[in-house]
Image 1 (tube, rainbow, N blue to C red):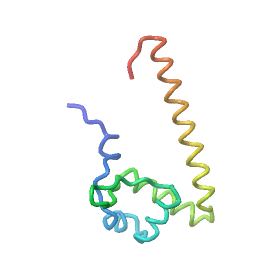
Image 2 (image 1 turned 135 degrees about the vertical axis):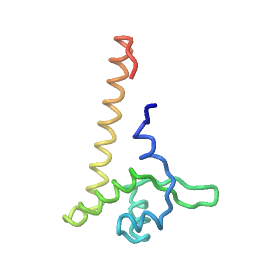
Image 3 (image 1 turned 120 degrees about the vertical axis):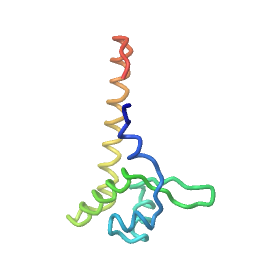
Image 4 (image 1 turned 30 degrees about the vertical axis):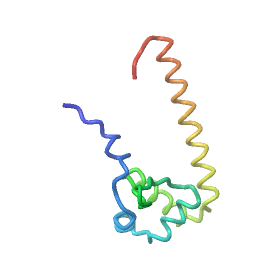
Length: 104
């Protein structure tokens, strides 16, 4: 049986308290990064934030960049560029796959 490893990394299942423990960041700092649109937790019906392992990795990258003196607006700018590149690459892969009748 094959396990899709990306699926568990992206499942939003952890609370902000657990994320705080894992990253060493305060809950307030984590919420601040959300306000700055650097991370995107899901919300339960009652408004509780839920995070994934991918969010933990992203928060650690953010913390490292902040420690190196990078401002949050610069991090956001780079994140936006990366997302645009990823979307463009995904679209190009889809077009190539369609042209050659290939699947992922």
